[in-house]
Image (cartoon, rainbow over all chains, first blue to last red; front, side, top):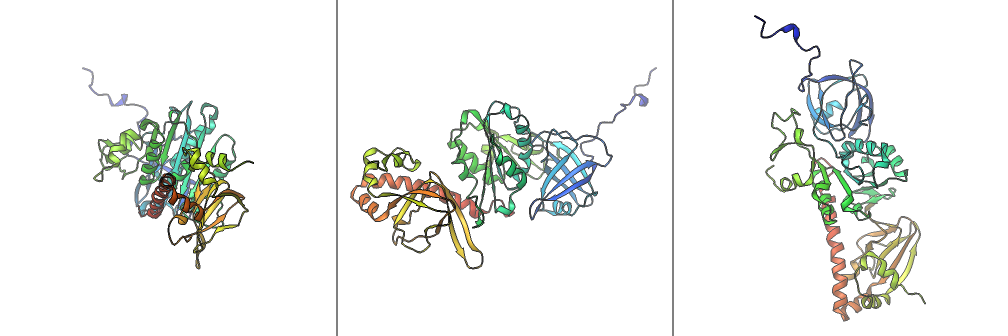
Length: 289
Length: 153
């Protein structure tokens, strides 16, 4: 009789567990603002790629401290360069901010849904970011600019608290200098040596002529900001299915098992973080969620 | 002679206003240009005018002895600056400084107030436009007050 299970016939390549972090090493560390920094990571093994889609996140593990869900902010076409921009706000991200080049970190992922970069082909693209919200949208910008001819007009509206809080200043300048992209930045307050806009990010929308039937809007920032921006876009006749937002809750497992990030009938780690606005408009109005 | 009427008609603030009403307003309007750095109004001074910005950029500032001039809002082409001319005691609440060469249409507040009092239809049309702007700026100010990009929200 043949054995029911032949251990010798086990798969040659083990499927990695989504709960087991892979060890990465910090290759570059760059301070972006007083509380925000960017880590460029490479697998400690020296080989392997980390493919992801714009909008997805990883669970980053600071050994001995804990895990945090952090969006991937690098270029999806460069899977050898895993890049995360992180704001030091909690115990984990503050500990992470103390990592040095060569230090190790655990990575699980990528997880979650992605921005509609492919669906937006043939349309105008309106990217609206607030604060650290530019980080999850940067991969979209890289992808759209890499295939610029496939898209109509491209707008980037970006709001932060002060000029010192603007992320990726060098890249913002380069994008602003392009003839095929309109970049508008604004800050909530500034001293008189700032020559840009002052006012909330919604005020920038007034400056644009948009075609709501031919534009895909992608919004990332504080939830209140996203609500107000979406409200203004709806006033401009945008359909709810043309507005995408990236939601944030306390994510733990990353695979929709633990329930920490349950958001109404969905789990943000699995069904989100990127949603069309029609899926969340009712939920956003509920205080209990 | 060319009048300011076509310029007013093309400005977003006056969208939808009838030519008859615009004619009434033109008598209170004049073309004014400010160079970068010029103060258009100063906090506490008489607010006897308001401006529609045709081209340029204006910073609304408050001065603090410890922080210097703090810009609380910037206004650009197509926007309106100043509503203190509508409400007694007609005093400016902010400094308004041209950040670059700024071309405006200036309205004499006293002239305008007398016309709005005399013609309530014109008065209502103007107030509707100002209330919309005030509501938008109030909403934006509330968002600014929340400090949404900080860690508190």
